[in-house]
Length: 261
Image (cartoon, rainbow, N blue to C red; front, top):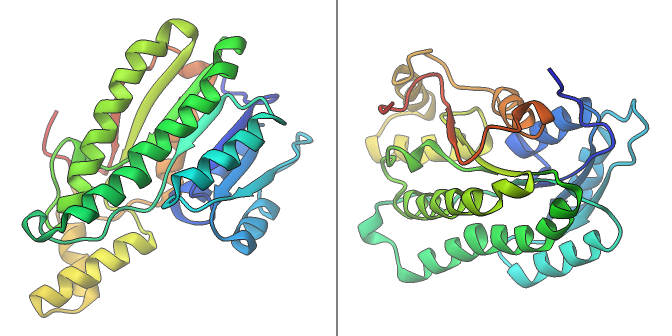
């Protein structure tokens, strides 16, 4: 099974912590040269220094805030002028929690820009090189909410579903060029995002965050939260030559929690 990424360059978004950073680490271990894209330069520098470079990779980073699509567009334009990027990992923090009925219209608009619009700008910039090379991997880190909406995540459920539909459409359009598009759907994963969500739910219920986390873990057949590295391993596999015939899928990595087939 060919899982080597030596000689390939990956752009990994939201990669200074959590699933994004874990994915960059896995890609580097498989031989990829990684470019990390996020808004915090000092955190980017630290993250790059922790990536494996045993195959001579020259890892780097670019600074952009995903709430500003124009800034992301400028950053990726500069990157493609210097590097042939054939792996893209779209990943960014989710919208604020809360019931969908209470969400202001502006929250949908900002989330749409941050997630779908930014993803689309990145894809449009990178696909020409992928087509020339006959190899491309577009991997979107989304959420299991694209299969079963999650409680108290109204805006997130809505926007994540839009991204999944966009990705499936893109997969159909690009497959003949050797480019695959797939979604990784993390379930409850031990990240700062999960801690924040658990704290909100705990406050609503009048219990501690630890008690809330225990309730959430109890919903998972595996009876625990996932680790970022476990999500990253699936994303990294999708980037490899071995995954060439996996296309247009949305893969839950959730310990079995999602209540659909």
